[in-house]
Amino acid sequence: MQNTLTTLISRQAEKYGDRAAYSFKSPGSDEWVDTSWTRFDKEVGQCACALETLGLQPQQMVAVFSANRPEIFVTDFAAYANRVIPVSIYATSSADQVKYIVKDSSAQIIFVGNEAQYIIARAIAHELPSLKMIVTYDDVVRDHDDNTTMTFKQFLQLGAHAGENCRREVRRRSESATPDDIATLIYTSGTTGEPKGAVLTHYNFNEALRLHQETLTELSSDWVSLSFLPVSHIFEKAWCYLCLLTGIKIAINNNPKDIQQSLREVRPSCMCTVPRFFEKAYTTIIDKLNRMKGPRKWMFKYALKIGHARNMKYRRLGKSVPALLEKQYQFFNRQVFMPVRRIMGVDRGVFFPTAGAPISPTIVDFFHSIGVNIVIGYGLSETTASVTILPHTGWELGTVGVPLKGCQVRIGINNEIEVKGPNVMRGYYNKPRETREAFTSDGWFRTGDAGFIDEKGELVLTDRLKDLFKTSNGKYIAPQAIESKLGEDPFIDQVAVIGDQRKYVTAIIIPAFEALVEYAQKKKIEYRSIEELVKNSEIRKMIEERIKKLQEGFATFEQIKKFTLLPREFSMETGELTNTLKIRRPFINLKYANEIEAMYS
Image (cartoon, rainbow, N blue to C red; front, side, top):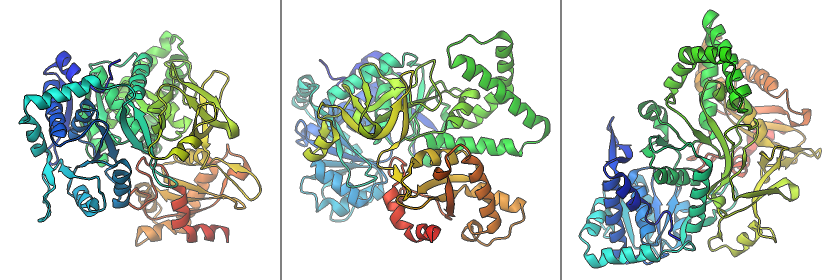
């Protein structure tokens, strides 16, 4: 059996030739530049020969520490051709995190993106006995005593000048690759404890990609996908590999902060993303709707009713749409929905897979009503991305879909979701105890997520087991459900629900600062700083009223009784968020201990 990833680029180059494989906008440039499959294959070949020339042996590892850019894909596929294992590190990782992963994996080479990442690599290199070389994707200013670093251009030149014996050895390695070879390690983001490297084999990727192609029959080589999430995230990595396998061109977005501009420039057919992207888009649109007046507001609201009826009551269920409703929808689609989608940059969008955290059914309903096809799924690093995905028709709001063919899902002790299938990892690298604990005695992977399977066979997530907590009154709380609901509000940006072993539930809330400032101006609230604004009694009263309304569907014991507004957002850099944008609850509990205690005093 041939490994899908080992020769993927060379096979696609034969098929597509000068057609664009990916596009990229260089820093400081406004132009997206295409790279052909032929050139992509050539660079992969040069990179593969460079790895062999420098002595990398099969199943040894290299680390890739960079934000999204084309060189990552070149490095990954050159490694696969050599039976070498590329290990991704998030571009925002700290020196300690990078050191841990390079040390744990015994990486021989670290590929870094920019100057900041080079500085980190240099600072920790002396503590890493396995590390022999740093390769920089950017032309950085090197330390005066640095004789173990080269640029990626120099690295490719090394491969370009390699002899026929080198190329023959790379071919031999490709031909001898087996499905049991390790393809990559995906290190968990470590919301609690130290990261663990999930061992994903080529067999895992072979099967995961096959299952996705069989399930997502609508994928087309004519599409363009915008790569937005970090490629170090299994969701983005597996999605990009699926795009390359399908012949879909990838537009590589380097900076997550540029995503809105990139969307409007690329106008992709598809893009995998996380709920937070759609939460922010939803609150922006709803805020603008609330500020509309007269006929415009009425028209938008009526259009939403038509969109909901057509897309949720008929199309979602696979029913034919009545002629009059279809005619009304097409009118409002042209006059209302298409302009909104065009402003977002999703007017050509066909398919938007979304996973990584719970998303409010209200938001999913809204975007489907205006013609944005959010496709909810569920998966983990340990399962080579997707386990479940919404079916084309008949799916229910609030679920994460049905298992892919070949994947099995069951509910275990404490409602824990358990998975078995060809996409499930081999185990955690260098961690036999953690590997044993991750599997049941009969071989099912324990996801750590709680949920249930509804009467239609669709999976419903309730929360992360480690996030679930119990109040001192013995009531269990699922914080993500509350956080997801509050995320619908245009004045609320981020939420961390608190209450483990406490008398009642509280929350630390990061308001949407632009909306807050605009509200203050409208109400003529005077303030000298954001710190002063979030403490203002009128602001607190307004937020309190909105929270009360949003929580009407929750039991009394689940509802937030007190809250603290913070003047700055949670971020990866300040430690409150993981690299996959999940809340690090233990860190938040520690960092904001004083604020939390004040809510219970």
